[in-house]
Length: 313
Ligand SMILES: [Zn+2]
Image (cartoon, rainbow, N blue to C red; front, side, top):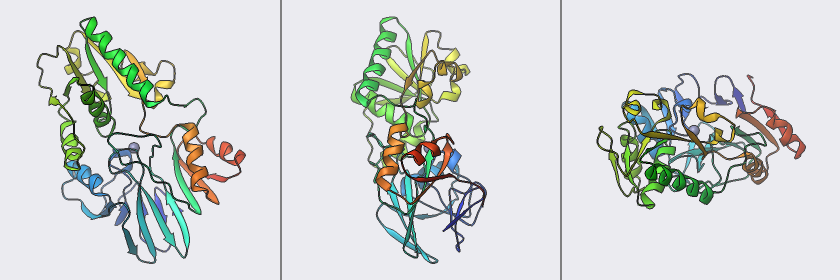
């Protein structure tokens, strides 16, 4: 049904899924840069295409909305929401009656800024397992929001500037949405603004934010991409206190890796239990894992699934 060599190619076709090298035609699951290369043509959802066009204006595209089907060579494809970031998609490929799902990155919990995940049955499942290890059990959403508020209020009381470190695409929009609904005044790094604009084009509204140009941050929350945590812009804010939002925050001392003062477990991926739950719902005859803990295949085998690592074929 498929071959794997720096990406997944559907057998007997020239159609790839998240190909790692440039190919004539690839499905792109979502706009995070580890899933996107320049290809001659891509198949993706309209929000993913809009975000990719921020970097690559001339990319040739075949937009496909959730629920519509496309026939290509001798396969039919359909995109299903993955719940990871806006526009993130799983792909269902049907060939000779066999159903294959490639999950891309996915999240089971509710998000304010991504379409809720849709889970369909399949014969073959190729899935990510970024957090496929039992220590990664994420807190409930309300617990995360409560901790976020506690952090911000403590900063304000001590005269500090709360700086939230969140990835530019997806995580930043989710936290800006939450902060807006809590009536906080939010300043955002300039690199986040074009992505916010794409989200707004697709009817995700944000209450109040402004792009940060070095103005007074009293009683404001600043949102920055994590790679800028040690940058000059933050160093100039003498009373900054930095909080990283990440699934990796479960690991002790993860804050040091991100150059943050504190870490809060907040992910746009499924946690360990949800990864298992996802496989049970898809109920495939064979599972292939990619992007994550390899030992997750043993947990899947214990649950009765025929699980393997995705390996070069
Ligand atoms: Zn991703």
